[in-house]
Image 1 (cartoon, rainbow, N blue to C red):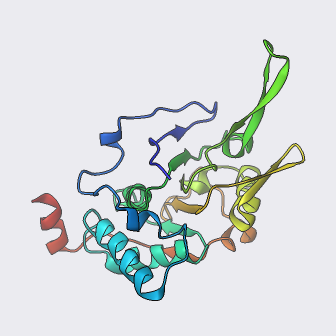
Image 2 (spheres, rainbow, N blue to C red):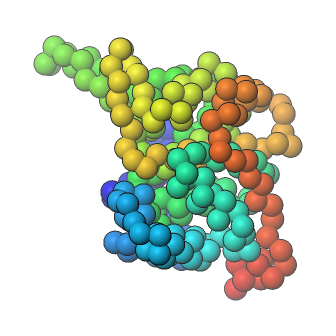
Length: 229
């Protein structure tokens, strides 16, 4: 797997791709070959623990003072589940997802959920090519290893339902054709629990797709000093 640029998906499917240096904090090291095999090839228990430790150490270079949250997030990914991060802005939710993708040498895509977002903006759709007279499928942001569903509760339940098949079966069915997603596939969804204006509650079927729900919280004083200096 190779690291993709961070693309923010908007209603019209367009996005911006910043330079690679802007993708993740400079403290995140380039992944080793061992780390990139964590979720691709079977490993002996001892080797698995060693590689998982490398990924954890890599994440702790960026997310300070949250070793338990990092451990739980990694467990959810390795177990084939997904994670819901509930917290106020500024606690490192987006940075954690980006750093995880960088640490496993995986592709990263981000969807900014808005009220006018459509299911096709998430899964992809077919476009007609008049020059060739054929339809061509254009993959949506779900075709990635780490998918950040930012502010997932700001879109309608109809659009949220586009993730049900994706999160439970690691595939999408469009126009009667099944398309498998790259492996590993891990959804990190975020929402602000303290803000209710313009939001939609997540349906039970959606909540059931998440292996865990995390609250990062602000770092303690020692970690804040380490972040600043």
